[in-house]
Amino acid sequence: MTNASPMPPVLRPSAPPTRPLADLAAHVGASSTHDLSGLTVRGVTLATADLRSGELFVAVQGANRHGAELASHAVEQGAVAILTDDAGADLIADAVVPVLVVDDPRAVLGEVSAWIYGTGADSALPPMLAVTGTNGKTSVTHLMEGMLHGLGVVTGMSSTAERHIAGHVVPSRLTTPEASEMHALIALMRERDVEAILVEVSAQALTRHRVDGLVFDVAGFTNLSHDHLDDYRDMAEYLDAKAALFEPLRARRAVVCVDQPAGSAIAERAGIPVTTVLTPAIAEDPGLAADWRVDIVGERHDGTTFTLTGPAGALTTTVPVIGPHMASNAALAIVMLLTAGWEWSALVDLVGGRRIEANLPGRIQRLSGPTGPALFLDFGHSPDAFAKTLEAVRRVTAGKVIMVCGANGDRDTTKRADMGRAAALGSDVLFITDQHPRSEDPATIRRALIDGALAARPDAVIHEVTPPEDAVAAAVALAGDEDAILWAGPGHQHYREIAGVRTPFDAEAAGRAALQASGWPTPE
Image (cartoon, rainbow, N blue to C red; front, side):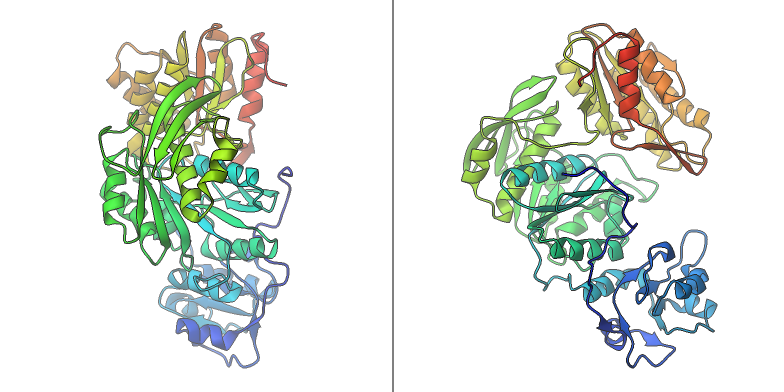
């Protein structure tokens, strides 16, 4: 696979079909300010920066302004028409291009995009597999891709970390792209002869219509834990958002981890056939009946070995990262591929008795060498992710467990105390630092973490160190040969967002530099 390289912000097929604009208006029941006879459309976007000549610009109400305020710029860029609501139409009453008006343009964006690109439920598309859940989506998606590559399958993928199109890699902006981007990306994948499409689907993607117009062949569920309560009133509403993926409108079959009551609730509520997976080592009810069972066989710094047993048989394999929760992710990936139609015998031949070959960017990624303290870089940014990963590190560490973490600004503030609590309870020494403060005061964010940590463990050893490269350097300097450091937060990201500006930041390089500065070897 090639390295990530600059690409246009939105990826589209090279020769999208042109469709009559009048037919589009009729398809979505839009009124129009102009005669649409003879006009055609060949693409759609929400962003003027991404717009190409001959495309439809969709103007929606944003957090601070209405997209219709950018209509003149869209026309300059070559927009053939504008789709908006009544408020937007009032703002651009003098537009020189047709204005199509619907009640809620965002709600029809998926349908519009599917119609334009020919990517709807009745289209000829390769198998599409989706994964949702609070944690583990990226790991499951990348594990599936690694196994499909081993089977000789050409893949397309959209994850939190990256977009992949038949071997080409593009950095991601959102976990799940907007509907216009999503359908254009799938159309491009089809054009590039992709044979399977893997998509991470966030709760926000479901409530904000980003996967509207798509029907996945298999939908997978990992888990649900405290996160995103800045978007949802409570955990029940957050679960409802996830549950929407498991209905006939969005998916044909489901594979659900039932280690938590939330998974059982998803399985019970699903309107499609469900296959269940249980990992007793992390399950709240280890004796719960499930179709597939995951038993942990061994844990080392370089991977977790497990046996997966179910209706098709049994296999023992190793996921190349630590933790029973990662074994659960790998098992979900295997069962999803099986459910999508890949042969059990082929999967056994590929991974049975050996390691699963997959790249998991910034997911419990070991940066250290064969000697000295183990340094793990992770993307975890929720209390549950902290707790599970610290527990996994503890089980493979003879000495101290040291943690380095921060929290993101302008996001769910209610989880910060719980993040501090999980960090303090799971580590011997805790370094609190910064991550993405965004518009918030970094000291305020750090204070919330420290208060949560001390409330849970008044005797906790806590160091407040910033910037983060200094924090990880101090943690490594404190560590001995048998100790381990977990640096949670940065993961795969190569920037920090400070006061609205994305500043380049390479956590992997900072971690390796910290090891080298303390005289410890790093992998070549």
